[in-house]
Length: 82
Image (cartoon, rainbow, N blue to C red; front, side, top):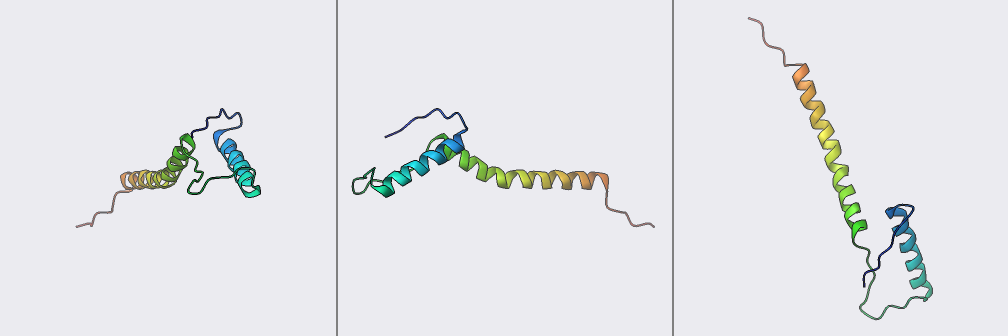
């Protein structure tokens, strides 16, 4: 069952607060899940987390590659003198 919300403080904060509230309600027995049911968080929040993980790898590698290219273009290897 999808649940939609319109966060004012930012998606991450909104989802973290909702996750905490739901987890506490399940732990206290306010929300009872039938056997075989579980709760998972998906949608834009899930996509945002996946994109963040990819960017944590891609951005440093890109900066390293750019630095290497600039270095090789400004400091060519020395040639032996004859």
